[in-house]
Length: 372
Image (tube, rainbow, N blue to C red; front, side, top):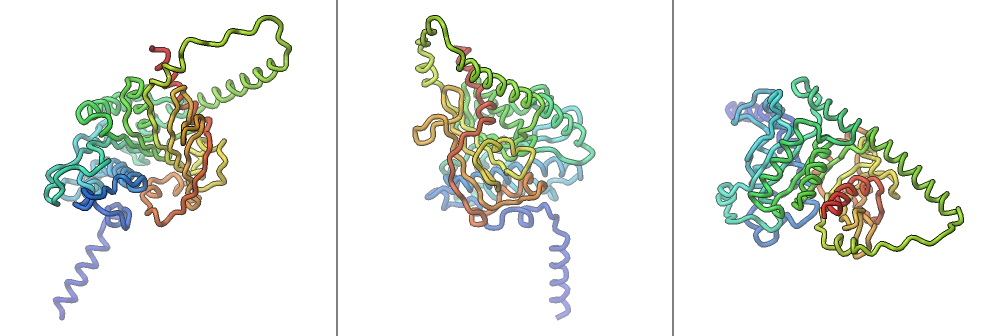
């Protein structure tokens, strides 16, 4: 009897000592791990499952840096808990050479772990490699580097001047060459979402389109605000000029065949996961007809540089609106909302065109047309 009570107390102490960031404590409650059943009906074909697992991978990238800061070894590290259940392993950490901090990770399908569970090959739609990029950590060892990049994005709406940008781009390019662009995925949260979106665009300019998932990407910047003012002034001037009677011959229509060139252009479709209550990324939906809550935007991009082509209709972005979701800022900007079970949220479909996303992606296709 005494021994049983002692064992019970030891178990309670072990539970109490569990780190709150452990997968079984902090992670999704009912997300199925990869198993042999996925060979018959792959969970990766489910968009909600993909969202939840990629969010878990990004959480693992956060924990890689926290493991380093808190000096955890292989036995006590927390990060692997967030990718091992899905049969992935760490291929390469992305390290900032200036201070040794880890800002991302390259994960690959773990064949040996899969074979041990009778999974001889990757399930359908499961990526061969994932590049996961973390956001800002408010801890002293990496706080200054992260905030400098936050300010860079705020001032210039670009992260290309960051030391981390070429490292993330090289990792994504190498993964695409090794595994094939169709088998690679890049994802990021907050600042990491900004990196993921921009390295994905940079690679798409090279004609390599990889699947891109960005959670709570930053949408506020001084440079962007100035461009918006310029576009608004141009639109107003265009309206005023249209009211002035035209004297002379009309300009000849453009018959250069640009449309046929654009129709042959490859498409790149990033997936943006946005909470309208998060003021860091809320401007993505400021011009969309949403009443609040959490928004997931899936953006097919038409070949003329804008957003569009849903069910054959160019100029429209497909949006799935979560009618429920966290409303306070810290929770609205948090990553954990994106691995919430699908049963915990109600989905409402809507069709909208977001001008900000069109401006974000227009430069990509303008550059492609100019290069032809």
